[in-house]
Length: 110
Length: 113
Image (cartoon, rainbow over all chains, first blue to last red; front, top):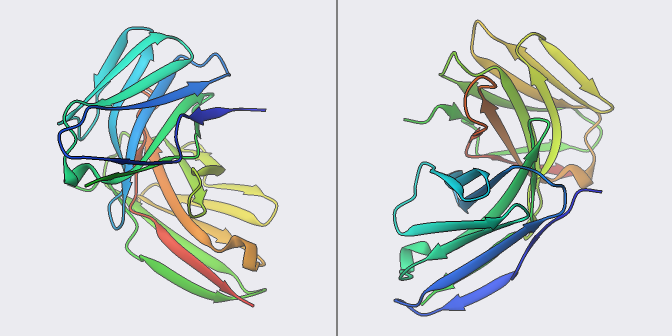
């Protein structure tokens, strides 16, 4: 069975802190994605990666960076958290044109 | 510019009746479409998909219809059950490009017992 895990379900950080969100998949998928979900805006793509050390910007990459050192792990980094980055963050990996999502991390920046 | 639109933010349906969720897209390069279901505090789960070479795909109580000329797809749930109450997202992609999906903004379905 497909498994995508995210390091935290809930996270509270202060403005200006550096924040790491980790995502791990066990399906040997090459493609992995980070989204944020906000009410009325749906899922918006932040970054994606199609191979180890390869990354591409999505639709809203500003204020974020990513790291993919191993195939199974894709990290999202908020260099200096701001209150407008309070959101639900969802990681996905892709196989056979289908994306499998993790449970999400609800991040609150105060 | 919103390439994938779900114009109804919410929908209420009686248990046992049909639920119809709609989705419109603007990019004619999209050739693969999916529906995801999301419960609160969980990640979206895949429901059903359709390729542009088809106009209908069925899986149990769920059927997706694609009208390419109108750039419109719909998800039919028959019969609707209270456990179907969730947010439904449609997504579109172009299989000849990157593996990006473009998601709609979601429709919250409430099935009333």
